[in-house]
Image (cartoon, rainbow, N blue to C red; front, top):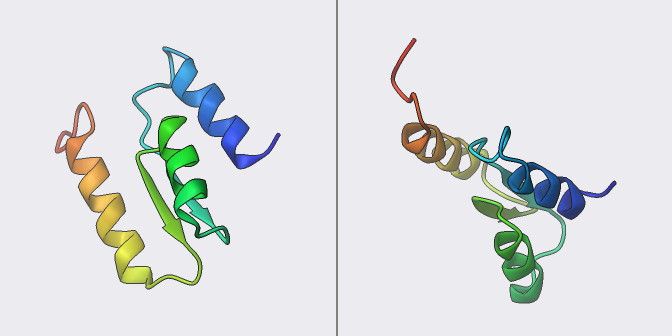
Amino acid sequence: INGLELVSFVKGNAAYRSIPLIIVSTESSDRDREKGLSLGADAYLAKPFDPEDLLQIARDLLSRSPGAGQG
């Protein structure tokens, strides 16, 4: 199973659909980004990337998640 298949499986399964997914890939073309996002990924980050960018994306996604801020 590759990353795109994993995104498709997770987002296609009601039990896991709300899990935020970030694709981190060496593929940086607009076509690759569009494909990942169209399959349901919540964000797409091409390598190399600034770790602060990944951290900010994760924070943003987690703040939007059901149950965010509870714990």
